Image 1 (cartoon, helix red, strand yellow):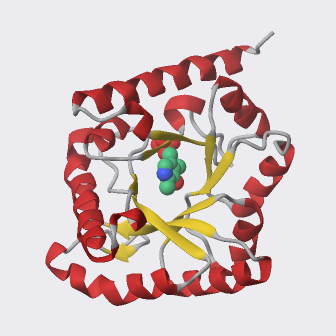
Image 2 (cartoon, rainbow, N blue to C red; image 1 turned 180 degrees about the horizontal axis):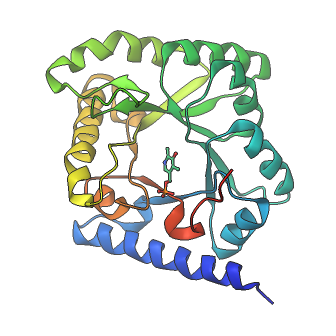
Length: 243
Ligand SMILES: *Cc1c(COP(=O)(O)O)cnc(C)c1O
């Protein structure tokens, strides 16, 4: 028998998935083009297991050491994909190369170079999304993408990252300012989409097809603006326990 909390997670997962599908259909997009990353940072293994039982196929984590324990606990599920979505200190890059399938939060050339060296040793490719700061908030990581007239200035850094042979750039990721009203996130999602178009035009769309944007607060708006990945935690697995 399913525990009560696992049953709640099952229902919330199904609801969020339905809301994603409806948001996609509202703008004539195909629901299957939008992937749901269930964010389980700061949640115990039991919560991850309940999310997987509910249908989760992609899990999002922010802290490499914490994630390593969960990934180990779920090794029998080899069809799961683990996405690193939090800021990664370069001294912890080794943990990502070891355990994760995708790094969504590649936010500097410095980190990219460190990863490349580790990936060469491991003889593995790592799919990455470039994290972009689309608001200009000081607290946000990522490439400086808030001033559209200055996008040309991003080119040297993006190009150097793209030349690293063991990193495979697949798209962009952002975390806009936190609003109570999801409509206020819309211009930031639209900006990330335009930046992907700008970079696709230059380098080919295969590198900038994926757009990871939208959280519990605003994932439907993000889907309407072109998200191919939404990162939803609280709305599915509930509030994060206090540390
Ligand atoms: C925590 C987190 C999320 C999920 O946030 P919720 O509000 O719980 O949905 C998404 N993206 C990033 C980068 C996060 O750190």
